[in-house]
Image 1 (spheres, helix red, strand yellow):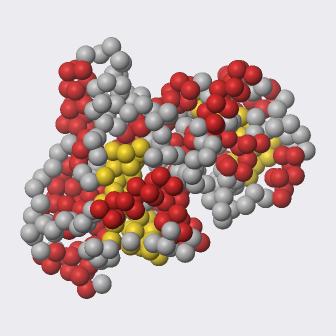
Image 2: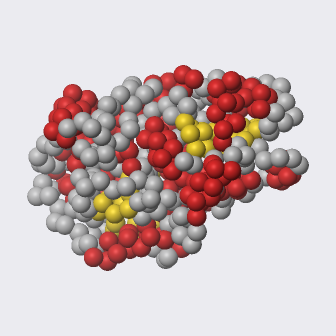
Image 3: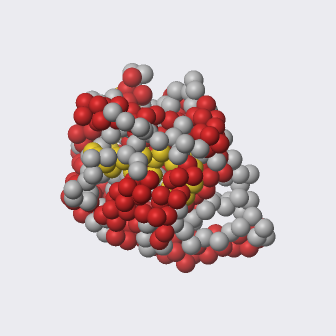
Length: 439
């Protein structure tokens, strides 16, 4: 199999796709990683072929937009900055490398260019979804910022609300540019972009287990749930000797991170340090943005650019974070209590799932102050009931190979899914396709 893995987003989106590629390559398949050049070095360290999308500066500049972390404006910021500009480059990358009968595309759901290539060229395509929050339901709706769909709300009203989200928000932003490109390939226009279209009609893999989020009756029929990917660069980024020694010198520290893509973490780290002082606890601050770290840290608090969670969380007293699905799953696997400060996107929904498991708690961003953090952490750390529930959650990972079932499904798909005929509009009719055909 020639696997084209299309990854769009921050480290939390890229890491699972790297993990998939690493396991597929271990099984003897060819892997080409399609992503921002910002992640090229990581892909090359796994000996993947690499196809760049845009420029590295596009990724770093996009992270400077504060709207990315706004509970409402974050939706528009993500798609305008990080998704729509990459539709054409993604299509071109796939079209120029597609070999019928050999190539399978494994694409993050927001890689709209992959869905376009699937419709236009007949490329066998798997959509990857990382978190349950992306799946709509009129039964148990996800907990999303600005969305009010409690369980008691009648299903027809929920159905109407989802439709209005498409008509007034999602399709208004996404449908015009996508349909303009579809017209070039003589493809009919589509609507309900974030309802059905963005998901491959052939196979959708949800990289989370049923015990974390119960499947709903109206989730996509082509969806198969596997397991948390748990990839965190532990194979290429060992824990430093300095950190190893420091952790061993005292009681378990509390780990703090607002997420790798968060470029406005000054307040988060300032309040986190003060909370450590109030609790008289040791702390570890994780951020690649050193300018966010308060100066003159006390000896009981250390800063590190990056540490694989699988290396540090089993030795931590608790984890305080933003609620990204990758970080959340690492804490669950380590049996580490977690306090989540959700900001946008799927984070609130993930926080609710953790609370349902009684493996942690969450706090509003507006209340993330040292006093409140200390009170919340005091309920988590050294709490025997919390420890019991965290250990029970961690028990679900015992004997489970993080990428095993996911790659089994991908291999079965490759064996049983022939390429579909390309759309009747010849690829040679478009500038993108002329370039692709000559590559």
